[in-house]
Length: 133
Image (cartoon, rainbow, N blue to C red; front, side, top):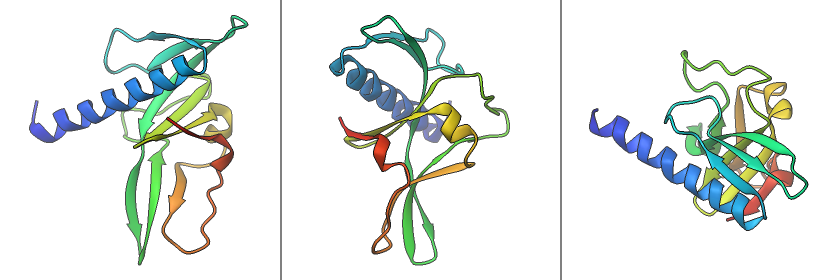
């Protein structure tokens, strides 16, 4: 595996561990996937026994003109075309912040989630799902 691809896998693994830690701190039980590249990164079980399939992504900054935006690609590559029934929660991790968003809201809204921006006055549409880790 080349160095860049390995770094990407390490970054993804760290985000998954941060997400698992956040769910544990919220009182969920967490079950992780055995295979590294699956449609569902983990399954979490709440206190009432309800399960949620979780996909975890790492947000990255991208530039658009003179402004930068923190984004998560919803359909990140040609080989991964997610379906509506693939999971329940779309979790995006960046540093010490996590967004835990119902997948159906993401699936029906956009191909990229814009989570934050450097443009003065920028208001993130997904801030209601934003938590500190």
